[in-house]
Image (cartoon, rainbow, N blue to C red):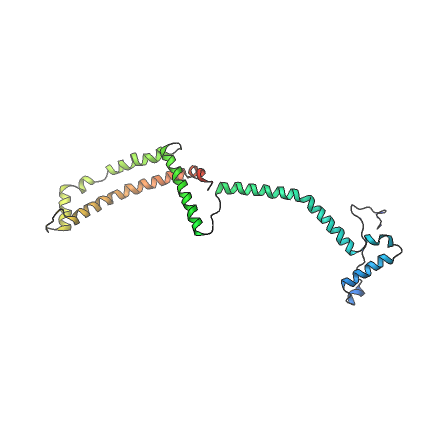
Length: 223
């Protein structure tokens, strides 16, 4: 059997002599057990010619060589798998964006670069070459002017209302140039009328921007 003539295996048979229960009870250490094992095979008339291929030390050496051989065979496929995974991860990073550095200076630089890239692509939408710019222009050319024309400036800036506001703010005290407080109230009141249409225009541009954000971000995804 140990010579491999009765039961053939892919790898050779290796005989070993383990510690007996008596050895364990006597606390015989592994060094002494291995020495007794070598002496057994070397002095045995049946196994003496196989002594160099028997024993726990030879089995450990044989298994180590086999493991090394298996690893060498698997390394090329493992390296190929690692390289493939690296390429896939790099492609994913290129798609979603590279990680931002830890220090604040590098983070600020990355943010500024993203802002510049976004500004560049957004301008391209407005200046032509990319879809959506005409709709954004339409907000300022049509929606905002139409809303401003509906504001009650004729009533707010009528002579009667101007006189009323100026009198309430400044009274009859003399003015070298103009009743400052009254004018300020008229201007502030006029600006307050602009707030609604202006915010509506900004909201409309935001909606359009978000709609085209996928296209815009596609142009700067390299960052």
